[in-house]
Image 1: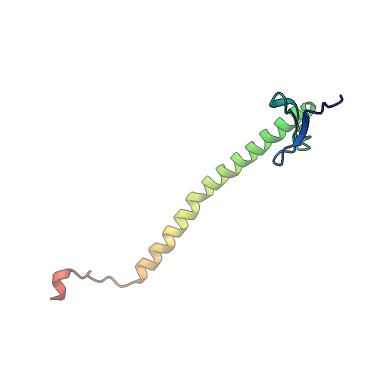
Image 2: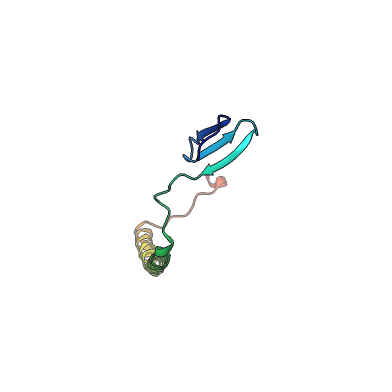
Length: 100
């Protein structure tokens, strides 16, 4: 379509959309979105949803395994700390009035 002399074509610096502004009217008369190569196709929606569901399930299974092994790691750390505490000699703690 031929542009009028009063129409300006402006490209947005952020999103690269094209706006056609009519200076006589003082408003936007056309808007064209910039092509987005990252936009998924509607035909691939089922495949995309299945991939995301599989990813969520894998992350959930990984977190379950981490939680199961967390108890083992904590008990192992506790046992090591208990062994170290048993190696130290037992001494009576100092109190403030013991220092006088």
